[in-house]
Length: 400
Image (cartoon, rainbow, N blue to C red; front, side):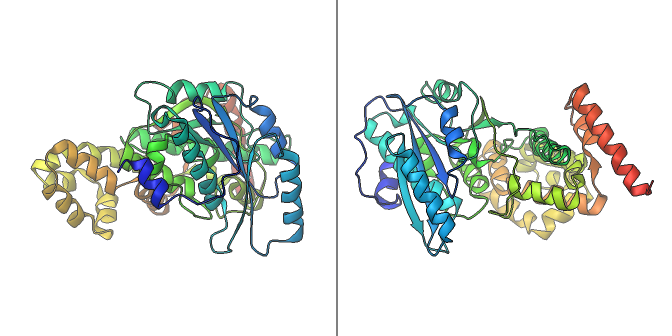
């Protein structure tokens, strides 16, 4: 059974079809979860072009059972505001299910149905936004140029640029956080990991087939984007950078245990140093040698152990990795398949865990030095701003 048909029959959310019929030219559905976002979602919709035969917007207005009255009232207002403007799904989720993952999944399942009905899912895409994340001009056209084409990727990630707040402390915080995100991607890229892309929900775009093969968006209350894109990369392959820009809000939030909102809260409470003293580049250099040794390790298992530095050997040992790698080797037909399977086991979560272990053991590295080590040039203006932040940090530490 074709992956999309199987998913629609077995996994997709059921819903009452009271929506407009699907035209054969539909190629892109943009899915936006909305929880008490009446004041912000209008700006997001205004940043998108008017609906055409090729693209449409699905807003999932949602809350959990027993939600506070002000949330329910806000959502009702959102539904009234959006009537006739976009497709609206209203969902009330059980407390154990409610969250951004469940809302994204409901909208993406509907998008999959509509793109399948349009008849060209192999040249279509499902894009995720958030209700506080406007886009730059060219967003729709840029996505369609990549996915409505020959040999489209499994998924893509839009360029993320948080707006810089006027408040100086919040501005420093979001600059620190965004630089840290970019640093991690550069680290992944250096070590040759296939997961060298940012995992931000509002920047995610996926093909219908890859969405179905990954069994849909996880119904997680946080981190759904991370696990989803990692699974897509493992199962379906190519995840590319898209030349379109999304501008997620830099607001403080406690809705999820990590992400931009929580990062801004951490910076507010603790200062931005957490994101300015980053995981040491040594972690990524270690992994680069380790991953590059995998073809030779297929022929001689000792080569991978020899290529790993002391900390990496200890990390692999702690996770039972040498036994896992030997099992992978024995079940791989050739060095290329073995190397792919190594990355499937030592995935993005493992890379992040190892980098954080190195930071715990060796201490953090100033982000400007770390980026320079990876060959990333931040430019003179940002470099000067970071140096000023470093001087302030040293001044605070010296008590002067």
